[in-house]
Length: 109
Image 1: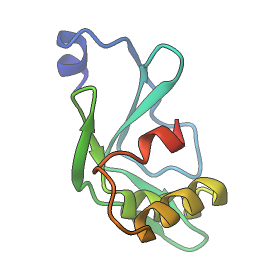
Image 2: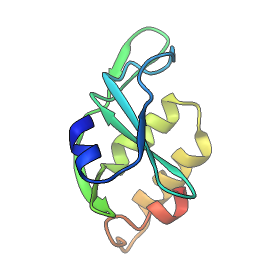
Image 3: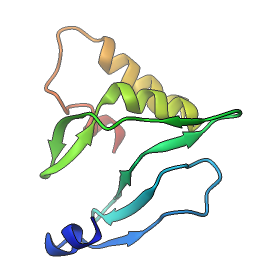
Protein backbone atom coordinates (compact mmCIF):
# COMPACT_ATOMS: atom_id res chain seq x y z
CA UNK A 1 0.00 0.00 0.00
CA UNK A 2 2.83 2.36 0.87
CA UNK A 3 4.30 1.98 -2.62
CA UNK A 4 0.94 2.52 -4.31
CA UNK A 5 0.35 5.74 -2.37
CA UNK A 6 3.82 7.04 -3.17
CA UNK A 7 3.53 6.15 -6.87
CA UNK A 8 0.17 7.95 -7.02
CA UNK A 9 1.76 11.13 -5.68
CA UNK A 10 -0.11 11.23 -2.35
CA UNK A 11 1.61 12.82 0.64
CA UNK A 12 1.07 10.51 3.61
CA UNK A 13 2.45 9.26 6.90
CA UNK A 14 2.20 5.91 8.67
CA UNK A 15 -0.17 6.32 11.60
CA UNK A 16 -0.24 2.66 12.64
CA UNK A 17 -0.17 1.75 16.32
CA UNK A 18 -0.04 3.74 19.50
CA UNK A 19 -3.79 3.75 20.08
CA UNK A 20 -5.62 1.35 22.36
CA UNK A 21 -8.93 1.83 20.56
CA UNK A 22 -7.74 0.84 17.09
CA UNK A 23 -6.95 -2.79 16.26
CA UNK A 24 -6.41 -1.93 12.59
CA UNK A 25 -3.53 -3.75 10.84
CA UNK A 26 -2.27 -0.60 9.09
CA UNK A 27 -3.25 3.09 9.07
CA UNK A 28 -1.96 5.63 6.57
CA UNK A 29 -2.81 9.31 7.01
CA UNK A 30 -3.10 11.05 3.64
CA UNK A 31 -2.60 14.81 3.42
CA UNK A 32 -5.75 16.15 1.75
CA UNK A 33 -4.74 19.81 1.95
CA UNK A 34 -7.29 21.35 4.30
CA UNK A 35 -8.03 17.96 5.92
CA UNK A 36 -6.54 14.50 6.27
CA UNK A 37 -7.87 11.13 5.14
CA UNK A 38 -7.27 7.87 6.99
CA UNK A 39 -6.60 4.85 4.79
CA UNK A 40 -7.25 1.83 6.99
CA UNK A 41 -6.08 -1.68 6.11
CA UNK A 42 -7.81 -4.42 8.10
CA UNK A 43 -9.97 -1.87 9.93
CA UNK A 44 -10.98 -3.00 13.43
CA UNK A 45 -11.74 -1.34 16.74
CA UNK A 46 -11.52 -2.57 20.30
CA UNK A 47 -14.72 -2.46 22.31
CA UNK A 48 -14.89 -3.17 26.03
CA UNK A 49 -14.67 -6.94 25.58
CA UNK A 50 -13.65 -7.71 22.00
CA UNK A 51 -12.02 -6.65 18.77
CA UNK A 52 -14.73 -5.62 16.30
CA UNK A 53 -13.70 -6.08 12.66
CA UNK A 54 -15.25 -3.51 10.34
CA UNK A 55 -15.32 -5.01 6.85
CA UNK A 56 -14.29 -3.15 3.76
CA UNK A 57 -17.21 -2.73 1.39
CA UNK A 58 -16.49 -0.07 -1.18
CA UNK A 59 -19.65 1.84 -2.09
CA UNK A 60 -18.19 4.79 -3.96
CA UNK A 61 -15.13 6.94 -4.43
CA UNK A 62 -13.88 10.42 -3.63
CA UNK A 63 -11.06 11.89 -5.74
CA UNK A 64 -10.42 8.38 -7.07
CA UNK A 65 -10.01 6.95 -3.55
CA UNK A 66 -12.39 4.11 -2.66
CA UNK A 67 -14.75 4.87 0.22
CA UNK A 68 -16.18 2.36 2.65
CA UNK A 69 -19.82 1.54 3.23
CA UNK A 70 -21.61 4.24 5.29
CA UNK A 71 -23.35 1.47 7.29
CA UNK A 72 -19.96 0.20 8.47
CA UNK A 73 -18.86 3.74 9.31
CA UNK A 74 -22.02 4.46 11.26
CA UNK A 75 -21.11 1.51 13.50
CA UNK A 76 -17.48 2.63 13.65
CA UNK A 77 -18.45 6.13 14.76
CA UNK A 78 -20.60 4.64 17.54
CA UNK A 79 -17.63 2.54 18.72
CA UNK A 80 -15.32 5.56 18.45
CA UNK A 81 -17.62 7.61 20.68
CA UNK A 82 -18.52 10.08 17.92
CA UNK A 83 -22.30 10.20 18.18
CA UNK A 84 -22.65 13.32 16.02
CA UNK A 85 -21.02 11.73 12.99
CA UNK A 86 -22.91 8.48 13.60
CA UNK A 87 -26.18 10.44 13.68
CA UNK A 88 -25.37 12.23 10.39
CA UNK A 89 -24.77 8.92 8.65
CA UNK A 90 -27.81 7.28 10.26
CA UNK A 91 -29.99 10.17 9.06
CA UNK A 92 -28.46 10.04 5.57
CA UNK A 93 -29.06 6.28 5.42
CA UNK A 94 -32.70 6.72 6.48
CA UNK A 95 -33.51 9.65 4.17
CA UNK A 96 -35.74 9.05 1.16
CA UNK A 97 -35.28 9.43 -1.74
CA UNK A 98 -31.75 8.08 -1.79
CA UNK A 99 -29.04 10.59 -2.57
CA UNK A 100 -26.01 10.18 -4.77
CA UNK A 101 -23.81 7.39 -3.35
CA UNK A 102 -21.21 9.59 -1.64
CA UNK A 103 -23.14 12.80 -0.98
CA UNK A 104 -22.68 12.22 2.76
CA UNK A 105 -18.96 13.09 2.44
CA UNK A 106 -19.78 16.81 2.38
CA UNK A 107 -21.51 16.44 5.75
CA UNK A 108 -18.57 14.67 7.38
CA UNK A 109 -15.62 16.72 6.08
